[in-house]
Length: 416
Image 1 (cartoon, helix red, strand yellow):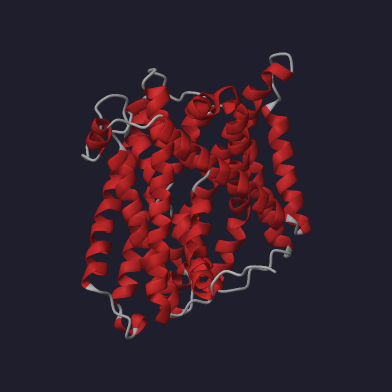
Image 2: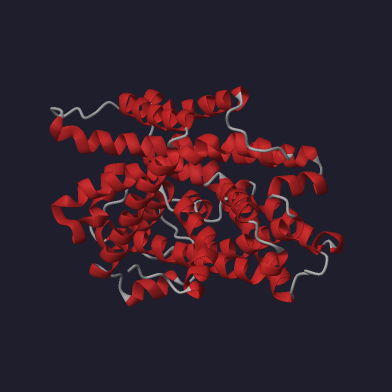
């Protein structure tokens, strides 16, 4: 006789699925690389960045959910209708830039980790980054073309979840001191090492423009109505808390291992040491499996994000069988070969790719707030004082992060 979950518990779990999906979407190669780099170089002193990014992610998830639920339309469609096509097209192009930068960075990390891990088995050279990139890209495109991606993505999501649990357990094995945590709560930019790009990357991997767009898509497909706004707010809070816990655990693992040894993350394989307190000699294999799974689960949605944005902008169905959309997916996927073919530091490229997102976040935040201030748009579902205050502070934060991101990129350019 099977035991069924109580209906109330089942409904609660179902109401949290969009938030859990967003956690799986956000936590990936970019998060692991950025948080590990921050913990390795600065210990827990940038914890404040992560806390603020998670808080404002909750506010924006809630706000984007509300715009979708009261209008029945997704983010880009609402922006185009109320603010015009040209500025919305600019946002689309900005998000496409973020998407392509992420593809370049993720595949760079994945192929670099595979090459370093495989050196003992290949006589010291390791698997060619070009060949491994072609293999992974071909696999994802084959799954896309044949419509067999769902089961595969569930499998790699399971592996990513195991890696997340491994980071949580490792953080308990080697916890940061209370003094480190206390210092990390005080907002301050370290003087050493030009951390601006890293801070922008930490924010960009959490409070990401493409994640807000995806949140809007998920909420609409769930069919949530304006009467269910409390459920959406609870769901977004769960997302933000889980993001904070997992990202903080990754940072803590790096702070407890690499930071105390004075070893910054310069190569992707350096991050293996973050799991050594838990996994010992199996840390390398565990990390490689997890980071490859995280990379593939990030690459697939990034490959198809272009057609999704175009469909949303035009208000059309996402028919991925169209020849034009398939050609766009293929062209987008080709950016996976940039690092394997032309070289570059995968870790630096990955962090820089995450730092692109803050460049457009002030505009998205402003437009979302303006929509929710329109009486004809929200109808009886007007903003509370707390929502308006939260969006105002979020806008200030995104402007500050825009400045930090620009400063970080300028420092990078001037440094050659």
